[in-house]
Image (cartoon, rainbow, N blue to C red):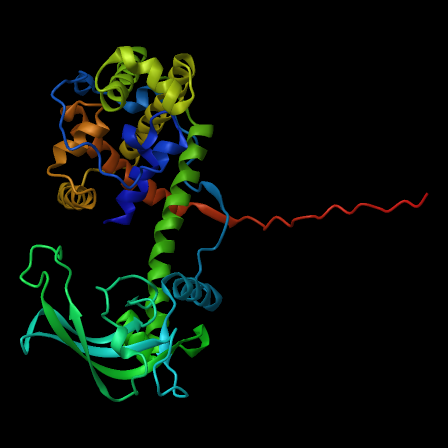
Length: 403
């Protein structure tokens, strides 16, 4: 996914499943795909054509001052903290306990096993290098439970030996020919395991668990990933700051008829997505799902649409003034990636969301937004960036007054 375009779209998002009434409920749905059903109704918004300069008085945008909360640099400590959190989240991880040679209750055992029916190995019955919780009759960590008796024969087994376990599959064991059958699992006991500590991470761990050639390569892989993420976050935060500066310092006269149609399109899209197209359900949905009255919702929608339209006009005017033109090839490429990112069947579904149900307007608007993302990228290159000083927390002390 092109982070340049994605950062801008996230700042400019008007997909109602993402914004709705500004509730936390819908923010949490940000990762979901827009509706897969393309609406056939149109808003008529595609008819509007504007010379943005006629409606906008631009502030000086040659060196926009923005303040960011951090440097977005990745330190060694950041990498270490990330890996520690990853280790704790996906753990526990295990390593061989060289002090143990006989399997006992509570042990985690590393084995290879082969399952045989009438002396012939059957499909799905063979696995190497498995960590098994013998007492729990499950995979280490409890992720997978086994059929009754699967690990029973491992108790008392010596490391380095083979052990046969007689097991009978349950009668209701899926739609396979193993249901109700008696089989033999032959285990090779490789080692008895213990939980490893974060400090024990080595090259072998990196190869097995991270697909890296070494511990050092694993650290570098994590660093690179974090740096790439930070490029995106810095772009997103810078874009938001620049947009806010422009909104605060430019003036826009929004054409009344265009604003009315945009607001109506926004309202209708909400009804179609969240009220099953039934306007009579609107107040109930707002009350039960968002704890808002219709008046509050309409005020919220006005604020959202006002911000959208002002940003559209300001960036459109700057694009014309800077001579920025649509790069058609890059637009098509990034559009395809965005459609794939959301798992859509076609770009029309995306146009429908960004066009308030009007596919024609949505396509027109997406092209305009792509152009404006180029403008924002240029403005980030010339912006004067400062990093905010960290706020020191003060602890109020209470004096003890003796009587």
